Length: 382
Image 1 (cartoon, one colour):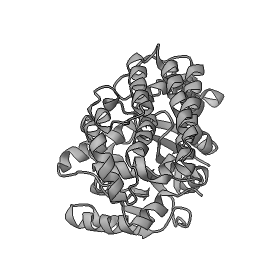
Image 2 (spheres, one colour):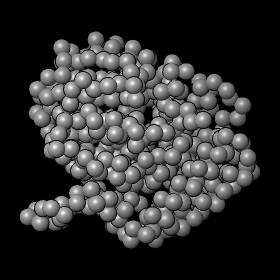
Image 3 (cartoon, one colour):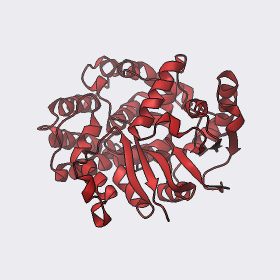
């Protein structure tokens, strides 16, 4: 049975999504930059009704609250998250008169009105029913309103899939979360140190990406999310900006609009760039990216199955897939391919050396583009 994020967090009484916001000005600038990528200027929020589902410990909600929405409803199912959120709001100036916190899962919650802006960040990657949740979120958006979600897919998360395989090698007989983090952290701290702008606590990142059993289940990509929403919503913006639209605006009428199909086509031509945040390469034949996605999906399933039954054949299958993934990327992203092969060397060594993983300058700095933020507009009449 799949363990959802909520079940895992509740069991361990954690909310591992905390951020370092000691420099609140920089935090607000990051969030403003995100909204700009999504086509939302800060002044658009003022006086509007806003819903956020799964705000966690509330670190990102501080920014939206500072923009003076007329109503800001936060729906959170994790009691620990609500406790930390309430404490955080008491420490930072937000538009508290407009903020309401509801303890509920999205599945059990029923909207009492339609919202101009609906945000759902970091939730869809840890649930077995993303289509059901997207339908529920869509119901809460007013016609002409904006829905913002995040996708984490098998390409953008693949370097973390590799690190998960390495983490399985190092945890040994550790049982508790603290014990596992204690074993993994020295190996990966230098990697995380290399990430400029990293604002999450390292222990939270390790728990959420490398230990939590729900974070290795199949992920949802942008074309899938867009397809699920297509009956009522059109693609609007994204972070990163992966869609280039050279179509003449006068041609965007009737069948010629097709914002969703255009975004999907753009995704498949540049999806390989999600594998490595350090570089941006030219679009390529989507055939190669569809193949790449399939290989990464197979590799992810191999690690998921290995964690369930401990059969080393799945780890061997994973290492074979690493070589095939590197081959797919060799011509277009040679450095990425080389660094993936370095990780393969770490995994196949009969005497696993965590110190060598920690000291890696190649694979050690390889991270995917994590979450992609996508905004959609609900069509009038839908």
